Image 1 (cartoon, rainbow, N blue to C red):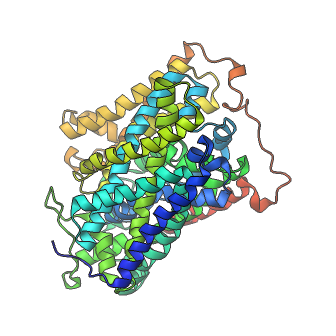
Image 2: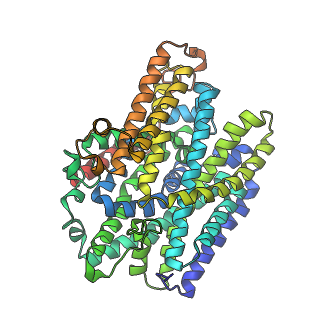
Amino acid sequence: MSVAIQLSWVDWSIITLYFVFIIGIGFYLKRFTGTGEDYFLAGRKNSSWVAGLAFLSANLGALEILGWTGGTMKYGMFVSHFYWVGAIPAMLFLGLYMMPFYYSSKIHSVPGYLKLRFDERSRLLNAFSFAIMTLLMSGINLYLMALVLRTILGWDWHLSMWISALAVGCYIMLGGLMSAIFTEIVQFFLIWFGLFLVAILGTVEMGGMHQVLTGLPDAMSKLWATTGSASNNAMGVTWIGIILGLGWVLSFGYWTTDFLVVQRAFSSKDLRSARMTPIIASFFKMALPFIIVVAGLVAYKLTNNPLAHFELLKHPVTGEPWNDTALPLLIARYYPQGLVGLGITALLAGFMAGQAGNVSAFNTVWTYDIYRVLINKKASDAHLVWMGRITTLVGILLSIATAYLAMQFNTIMDYIQAIFSWVNAPLFATMLLGMFWKRTSSTGAFWGLILGMLTSFTIFLGFKLGFLPATLVHLITFSSAPVSGISDMSRNLSQAAWAWSICAIATVLISLVTKPKPDSELVGLVKGFTPIEHDGKIAWYSQPKYIALIAVAVFAALNLYFW
């Protein structure tokens, strides 16, 4: 295949130094991972800024960088909803209200909280479902990394996959979560400085930001003005789907329960730092559309201008234009030799961050919530560290297998949101009720989770296999549009909302007729039974609630400006 970019020796040197650097970090940090607390939670010694940057970097992987650049070409400005409505309220809620329950319980994982709050059934159900989800997500990261290496460098698909997987596996096996966090911070700055130029140079070529935003189809140019009817926007959703499906269920389900990101907050040195972790990360999250969405809009305009000579690669399965190749091709267009190595390294850093986050979360959940519970209840701390390293290797190998599933989707974010609706949406209902309603019973939580997950997956299969009648489709999606015109993303948002609702309703009803835990077992786990941290003696600019208020103001201003 043709190579998009001819690399100079400087470019190759930058890429090589990056791989040597991250592997070297693993060898260096191995000496500091003697205990399970060190290996799986980085010793709980990190500041709020360290944990906050790692918190966002774990999320800012290939899924964000390539996925939403390609998604912007399909949905336009609507993608910004996934950064603002779909992230900021949930991140702030996690820091202000949920983190005290997580951190004070001294758990190693989210399933660990379910064990303490409910019972072993809920813990194992979530542990297995989360483990499967992390492997699927890890496979997506590998797939997109291999895509970049093949697109830009012309590497063999399989070679790209294995090199990428082994590099991540090496430094996670050696240094555990501390290694992941350290490299994620480095990767955070590489992503920002390496990819920001794409948005800047693309905007310059378009003639300024005004030209980037004008001339778009009406269905792609606004955030809220076109949400009165599903037919008015490219995503095919109404404001109900945005607020309930994305803003409430998928957003809160991911940011407050997904151990991939929450684990970084667990590594904080104290409760205030843990609460500040997602709040600090929220400011950087709000800024990301100015890189990713702008780059996607530039790519959209270039592909629709024959004189620009910008053509996407073809999807290997469908043969259609492959939206996820947009960002690598923009790098090929704008970066000169000698600088392109920085852009490629930034992409690799994003993939490494996402891959490392999923692998480190997988090894923790498997080791503490499955292996120690079902296989070796008397395992020593040293043995658990050894098992964590072995699990990392196994997780990498399984991720390679799941990477091939990702190839079946033209826009990778449709696939990702479907996965979140299966696992995170019902889990959020369970966690919310468990933390804020002491009457929630163990039996109610378990069966609510099962029914919520089954609801989401049934809707997914119903759409894919076409066995849902049109009347039911319209009811599920809150849309009167023809069934053929309902987008995958609209379906994802709807099935997430239904999964959450069914889980919540079932949990409440079953809890009312079953026995809850006594109050003495709810200390540190439920509102009203958990000590509240008072920030009165701390300067206002260090208090989580005031920093969160600033974030809310910025969030509101962005939505109003791009209305």
